[in-house]
Image 1 (cartoon, rainbow, N blue to C red):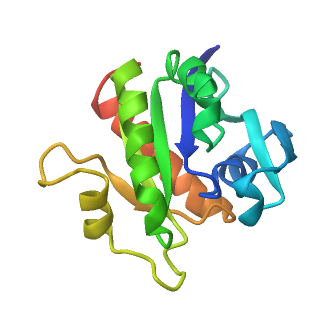
Image 2: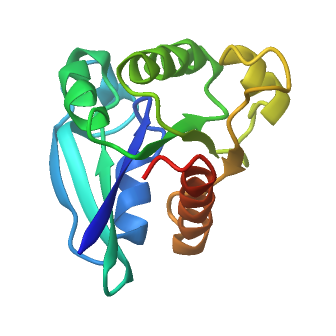
Length: 179
């Protein structure tokens, strides 16, 4: 059986673990623990190593979804996970512009280690203060329309929304023939 390894990354609280839990056909393996640093201001529990879920596409093809921790102090896990990945989605909380710089650092980190297709998933787009797609593209360093990755709005709590984002990611992967 073949498997595609897809990474779900992003800043703390962007919805990575929830994204994987919403779509996985198996019970998600996670490394969540009580948040003890500034992360505790956003949420009670946080991922410290990875989340793992699986989605069976066909009898011979499965998607393995790996969620990264959001904190840069765990970037060694980003490094381990991205090196064998086929593609990744960067989740960005559209209503927290103070985190866009960190999201940009994650893109740089990932792209330095692997030249693989990626898309941007915007979460929390329905929240007060959410930025537009165009403004987020600019904040992430995409100054012109060329070479921009696909962008999708995604609600990590809704299976259908997550499924649409995964489909866009897989289509982008297939268009770039990396598998």
